[in-house]
Image (cartoon, rainbow over all chains, first blue to last red; front, top):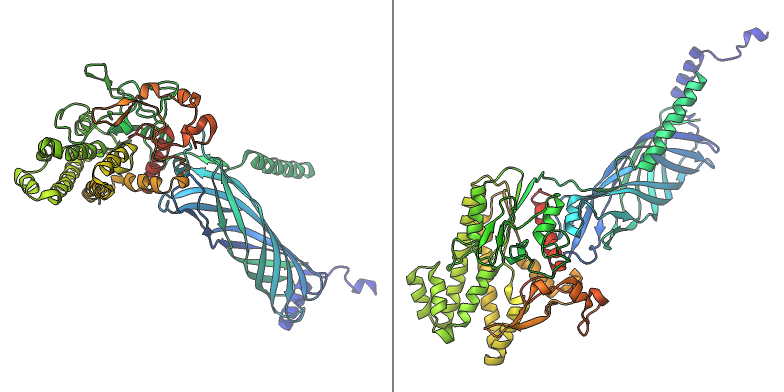
Amino acid sequence: MARFIPSAPSAAALAAGALVLLACGSASAQVAGTWSVRLGATHIAPQVKSGNLSAPSFPGTTVDVHSASALTGGINYMVTDNWAIDVPVGLPFKHKFYGDGAISGVGQVGETKVIPATVFAQYRFGEANATFRPYVGLGVTYAKFFKERTTAPLNGLTGGTPANPTTASIDDKWGITPQIGFVWNINEKWFVDAAYYKSFLKTKTHLSSGQSIDIRLNPNVFAVGVGYRF
Amino acid sequence: MISRTIYNRASWSVVAAACMLAACGGGGSDTTPAARVTSVKVMGDSLADSGTFGYKFTVQGSAGTGTGSSQIWPERVATNYDQSLCAHYRFNGASFAVNAACTNYAVGGGRINNPTAATAPTSITQQIKDAGTAGYSDGDLVLIDGGGNDAADLVGAYLRISSDRGASYRALLLTLLDATTVTNAFAGGSAGLAQAGGLYMQALATQFAGTIRANTLDKGAKRVAVLNAPGITLTPRFRFVLASIAAANGAAAATQAEAVFDGWVQAFNARLGASLSGDARVTVVDFYSSFKDQAVNPAGYQLTNVTTPACPVTGRGSDGLPTYDFPTCTAAALSAATPPAGATGGADWWKSYGFADSFHPTPYGHQLIAQLVARSLAQAGWL
């Protein structure tokens, strides 16, 4: 008797099973206790409102922070059928700072790497096995800035020299990050996750010249990834 | 197989750790300028003089020139390109010798229009010609200032009209304006006289721009920064002059005179800007506006005093104005002196002053000019 029951399903049987599941389109389980990972890309577009660089500076010396993209992913755990904990992970983003206001046109004044570490609590609408599940989330973000790097124009503008350059340090800050997105389940295991979030984030950059500048970043964030469910 | 996997993992983590420690691709400052500048050449007046007379026209450092001396604005700009400057002309007490290895042609007292010594190094026009004769290469950055002393000459001649019946004013005007224009100006009363000053300054700017074009750009210079003229009415020297006008003829007369003199400088700057515009090889640095902004908004530049010279008065000139002595006005002497009433910063009190004497900036004032020039250079894509 026992020899008629295979100890492991054959590949063909698995494929057939998957096809059956796909055809049903209703077995995409996001039930409580499900872990998933995803891989994709994230684009961060800061909506900058810059303060003025403190004295001594030209009145109205401000900066603009350009967008950055990075290879990212995430880990998601379904606590219940509707509630999830979501942690995006990824490579650091590299943002470039450009002179603006009174120093508009001077070009790049610096760059920084940033890891915006965020933990989201998400509520996913619909049934656990629905193909399309929109969600809303609220996250807490800790933006860690590192490898701040200044340029020759910034040196010239702040009295630095090649031997004693003006360097920069950006305060690491906490922020709140609301989120909307959706999960579209390709099959029981594979899915596409897309989200838009907005981080409410203010920070302060300190220069070794003793000057400082407040910058409100409030970035729009667009994340997309292809995920796999365990 | 297993050991190999472990080895690979270990090497990856070592690389990752090394990246974190060594700040892979980041941190600190990338001080490489946008343009490769291999030589900085300077022409101008006392503001840009690296020590033609053995000292600089500011508070002296531990030395008058070279190592330890106060850094003036063109030297600060040159430092951004890892270049240094030294005076091309050296005054030996009687005449000027040339040090061909040094590329700062600027000389204290330099004028664009120097009628009494048109071919001397105190003529900025002559400096520009000498530098042009030496030639330019692609790696040169040229810094030129001028016009301040010319404006001061014109104001001085104008103020002597009542005592010399206009002889010196007429003579100066005639060096750049035709006889008919000057005669008409004198026939036009006070308005005509004031207007002639504006025409003179416009002609001066046209000539200055032409000199720069013919001897700098046409000789191959690719990067030329020209400072326009500062509003000399904001210097302590001209505040003294205006105060004496106010004392003699009333405040309204002083206000009117200030407007006339400032209008002349603006006329020069407007013409200079127009004459040099539209050429990517030239950037005109708006020294006038920045200087005025510092006078109006000193706190924004961390200046505590923009009206009183930091150096002590050493005498009175023939014009009745206070005189100062730069060689003895050193950083050490000022720090050792009792700070004036109201000054802050202890022994560093003079470091936040705008003026060293009644016409020249402190080393900090020079830093602010250098930062202004750096902005223009960066905007031109050269820094």
